[in-house]
Image 1: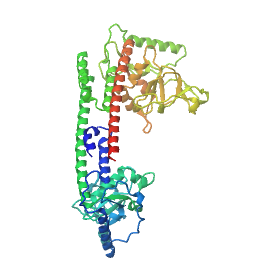
Image 2 (image 1 turned 90 degrees about the vertical axis):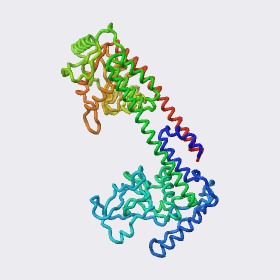
Image 3 (image 1 turned 60 degrees about the vertical axis):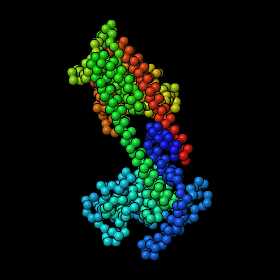
Image 4 (image 1 turned 60 degrees about the horizontal axis):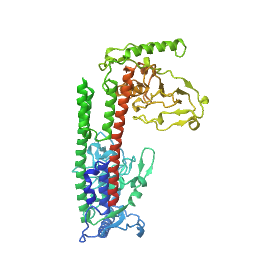
Length: 562
């Protein structure tokens, strides 16, 4: 147990660390490793004898039916390290009653008497705001009344909620409804809170899922299967000590969880404030000052990979605002570049290489969110690229060695190419778009997935990916970063068509605002973004590695205490 406390503060930083510690506490509790044994405690075998005597009394009074005997537990089933005075038995042997609830009609209009529903168990407690009502007969009232100390067990539910439990300990009248099993013991002999701890342990260990019957929308545990569940029963006094210790440690976990959430929220807010100041810098001096603040507090702001993702967005936002690198007065202004692009397009139209396009709407002042740096111009994406006009190819003419790119091959968010598959192994059966080395490949389906990359070689792709080619002096790498910038992703998401499979339409895509820097500045921006993204990737790897190390440390602690 000391091993857990020696590393407690570090272990809570592991992925799902607090939840894993909770599960470990339950495991130690039911293994007899959480509290010391007392040689003066009455052995659990005596408790079983007393429970059996209580059942016989109830049977003689016709309050319960005689149970069908279960097969005896074999010697090889008993754990080698079973603590002294503990006993391995079936769950039904330590209960007075295991019963189904009232299965008649219920309502939510408060007509009749309050009765549990499947939703009544919430966060390990009985939630009175989630009860139903039913018209019960006098016989039903006597049969289904819930007593303090009764355990409610969710035996018909989704896999996620299967096996949830709650102990009824409220000063109200409540009756037992369907889809929940009621487990009742005699608290003077067996502590119901200990039984509840054991059931929680079995749920978190995945045992209940293993014995359940699974359907499409829900799973169920047969009552007879639950009756046979093996339980390690300690002496009563030790049960009380275990319950007290578990309550204490779970309370500590709850406090630590609140502190961690508060700390993480504070870090997130500090990070957002720092990035907001950075993005809204008015002068190069302000930008340098706010950037230095982030550098000085790097360890505080970027404690998790999620915070690093926000930094990446800020870098791209600064890049497309012209704040990431300085302007060079010797650069040819983008207005001249735009003239060259128009001339090149006109030449291609005359030569029959491209078709004459429908004029794009003029840019309204409100469409430009930022003051453009000197030498920059605003234009439409359709003005500087061949957006939506890539050539197509039919599947029967695709060669076996041709690279065939599908959306699934690109990792969302990072835009990393996960795999490169040729037509020999993919055997395309639908029309594809043709792309060339250097084209920017933009995933128009579900643009929030942010799948954009620059082609490293020629190939074909699904028509849900648009090959974009910039005209003269448009860097494909600058175009790629622009399409991944927060502003463009927001525009694309707000301009999608379709509910189930939202995609950016061609007209909306061509109309998108594109902030065009001089060509040389495009190259400087790309170099700077690439450098900063590599630093962010290294930081993410370090944080991920740290989390993995903590996860392994937690695993070692668990293995060392099992």
